[in-house]
Length: 184
Figure 1 (cartoon, helix red, strand yellow):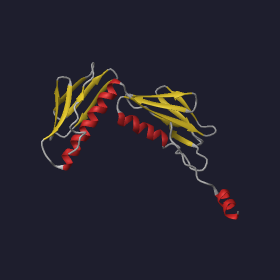
Figure 2 (cartoon, rainbow, N blue to C red):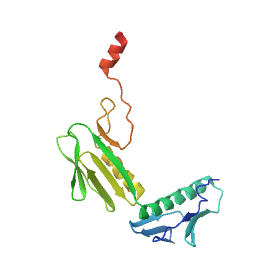
Figure 3 (cartoon, one colour):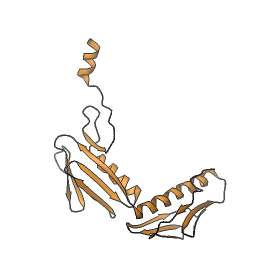
């Protein structure tokens, strides 16, 4: 039996959580979020607290109970504090420019790459080489950050590309370094 599914989550002040017809709706200062769930898992809201209950001992349903508990917790954090991912552009001539809500990336291609910001996502640019993705929905924030990173993944020889802030890139030795080491 998992412990995460049994966790009781407090609903922060200023946040409204409704459960009806297989959907969970959370409204807060940073936005509104919707999540559908399996009705075999009960979601109870009492006295400013929310809990997931599974009446079965089926492993898949117990796993779903933990999943929905974590999703509800992430929704509550998202509408109160929000989520953010920071990215760094490393390389000569690599830069990011904000165009309205969208992001334009100059990444060494013959054309600029435009990243469209979906509803509820904010793209911020610090200087020319730092990008921050902010939003209430953790999944969408991570998805957009991954989409930006895929424009130019970090290459292992010089370390150029788009990386998450604090990401460590292990560099490979090139051909010249291998032959020099082998000749000695």
